[in-house]
Length: 220
Ligand SMILES: [Zn+2]
Image 1 (tube, helix red, strand yellow):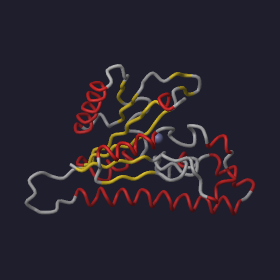
Image 2 (cartoon, protein in one colour):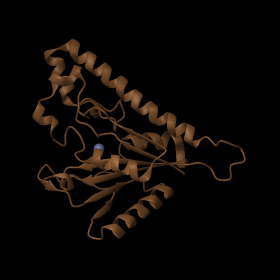
Image 3 (cartoon, helix red, strand yellow):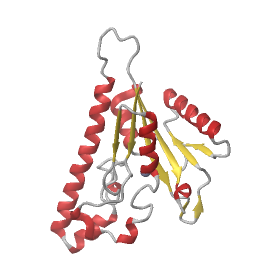
Image 4 (tube, protein in one colour):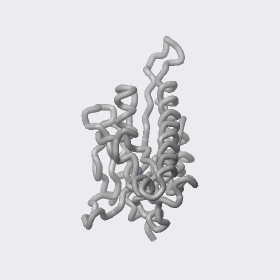
């Protein structure tokens, strides 16, 4: 088994081409990035020493690495706003965002592809990749308080993912008994995203799980 860690929403930075499109105060909010996720992700890298890791370097308001590029929500409304005031700049930013998205996805797919290829034909067990995507969620959305500390997202139709999700939950509960851990909350593991794409592309030997951490742990 090979471990892969990713953090699509690690950063709230913007490339120079898109800096004027987003107000500075918006960049500080959960809309721009997964607050706290990058710190947890980097700690996990040191602790778990994955075979491969990858983190987003720009805000999801530039482009959301956890959406299919053909999904309208991959691009925030700030692209349209920029288009109204500066069409050339908007086109340039969108092209750059698309190229950045492609490069990110490509790097990950190349790793999974090579990791799943058996090195020798006599290999007894088939190689597999376990992917943990590290995310965080805002404690309150549209006036509704989210009722969980950690969410574990997976596809319930896939036995391997179900098994790993249960092990992760059990281990969190062993270390932190008071922690409220929920499956497929606050999002479904089967919604459009990186794991869903990789499942379709690589089949059952790819195991994709997303860990969603409540941002209340990172607020002062
Ligand atoms: Zn996220």
